[in-house]
Length: 94
Image 1 (cartoon, rainbow, N blue to C red):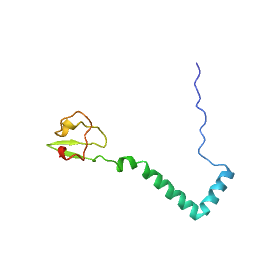
Image 2 (tube, rainbow, N blue to C red):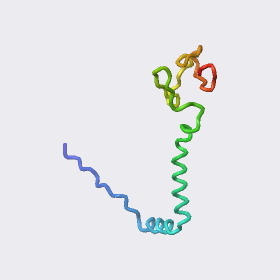
Image 3 (cartoon, rainbow, N blue to C red):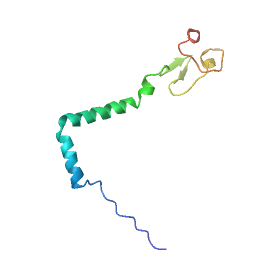
Image 4 (cartoon, one colour):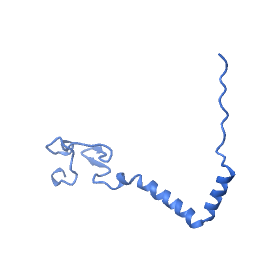
Protein backbone atom coordinates (compact mmCIF):
# COMPACT_ATOMS: atom_id res chain seq x y z
CA UNK A 1 0.00 0.00 0.00
CA UNK A 2 1.41 3.30 -1.05
CA UNK A 3 0.40 6.76 -0.05
CA UNK A 4 -2.50 8.13 -1.99
CA UNK A 5 -1.78 11.50 -3.48
CA UNK A 6 -4.71 13.85 -3.70
CA UNK A 7 -5.22 15.44 -7.08
CA UNK A 8 -4.17 19.05 -7.33
CA UNK A 9 -7.14 21.37 -6.94
CA UNK A 10 -7.42 24.32 -9.24
CA UNK A 11 -8.97 27.55 -8.13
CA UNK A 12 -12.01 28.85 -9.92
CA UNK A 13 -10.04 30.71 -12.52
CA UNK A 14 -12.01 31.72 -15.58
CA UNK A 15 -10.68 31.35 -19.03
CA UNK A 16 -9.77 34.60 -20.80
CA UNK A 17 -12.80 34.25 -23.05
CA UNK A 18 -15.22 33.88 -20.12
CA UNK A 19 -13.50 36.71 -18.24
CA UNK A 20 -14.03 38.98 -21.25
CA UNK A 21 -17.69 37.93 -21.49
CA UNK A 22 -18.19 38.72 -17.80
CA UNK A 23 -16.55 42.14 -18.21
CA UNK A 24 -18.82 42.91 -21.18
CA UNK A 25 -21.84 41.86 -19.14
CA UNK A 26 -20.80 44.07 -16.21
CA UNK A 27 -20.25 46.98 -18.61
CA UNK A 28 -23.93 46.77 -19.53
CA UNK A 29 -25.17 48.49 -16.34
CA UNK A 30 -28.87 47.99 -16.98
CA UNK A 31 -28.44 44.27 -17.59
CA UNK A 32 -26.09 43.88 -14.64
CA UNK A 33 -28.47 45.53 -12.17
CA UNK A 34 -31.44 43.67 -13.65
CA UNK A 35 -29.54 40.44 -13.00
CA UNK A 36 -29.04 41.34 -9.32
CA UNK A 37 -32.65 42.46 -8.91
CA UNK A 38 -33.76 39.18 -10.46
CA UNK A 39 -31.57 37.22 -8.02
CA UNK A 40 -32.97 39.11 -5.02
CA UNK A 41 -36.56 38.58 -6.16
CA UNK A 42 -35.87 34.91 -6.80
CA UNK A 43 -34.44 34.54 -3.29
CA UNK A 44 -37.53 36.23 -1.80
CA UNK A 45 -39.86 33.90 -3.70
CA UNK A 46 -38.19 30.90 -2.08
CA UNK A 47 -39.94 31.98 1.14
CA UNK A 48 -43.29 32.85 -0.48
CA UNK A 49 -45.03 29.70 0.75
CA UNK A 50 -43.92 30.49 4.28
CA UNK A 51 -44.96 34.16 4.15
CA UNK A 52 -48.26 33.93 2.25
CA UNK A 53 -50.25 31.09 3.75
CA UNK A 54 -53.48 30.62 5.70
CA UNK A 55 -51.82 29.59 8.97
CA UNK A 56 -50.59 31.90 11.73
CA UNK A 57 -46.86 32.02 12.43
CA UNK A 58 -47.14 31.64 16.21
CA UNK A 59 -49.95 30.90 18.68
CA UNK A 60 -49.71 31.21 22.44
CA UNK A 61 -52.68 29.67 24.19
CA UNK A 62 -53.04 28.64 27.84
CA UNK A 63 -49.30 28.71 28.46
CA UNK A 64 -48.43 26.63 25.38
CA UNK A 65 -46.69 27.85 22.26
CA UNK A 66 -47.70 26.48 18.86
CA UNK A 67 -46.05 27.06 15.48
CA UNK A 68 -48.72 26.10 12.90
CA UNK A 69 -46.58 27.21 9.97
CA UNK A 70 -44.13 24.39 10.69
CA UNK A 71 -46.38 21.72 12.25
CA UNK A 72 -49.96 20.50 11.76
CA UNK A 73 -51.97 20.54 14.98
CA UNK A 74 -55.36 18.85 15.45
CA UNK A 75 -58.42 20.86 16.47
CA UNK A 76 -58.37 19.19 19.88
CA UNK A 77 -55.16 21.08 20.73
CA UNK A 78 -57.17 24.33 20.53
CA UNK A 79 -60.38 23.17 22.21
CA UNK A 80 -62.07 21.67 19.16
CA UNK A 81 -63.86 18.34 18.95
CA UNK A 82 -62.22 16.62 15.99
CA UNK A 83 -58.77 15.12 15.37
CA UNK A 84 -58.60 16.77 11.95
CA UNK A 85 -56.28 19.62 11.01
CA UNK A 86 -57.31 22.86 12.69
CA UNK A 87 -59.10 25.56 10.72
CA UNK A 88 -57.62 28.69 12.27
CA UNK A 89 -60.36 30.94 10.89
CA UNK A 90 -63.12 28.97 12.61
CA UNK A 91 -64.69 31.15 15.32
CA UNK A 92 -65.41 28.04 17.42
CA UNK A 93 -61.68 27.50 18.00
CA UNK A 94 -61.19 31.03 19.30
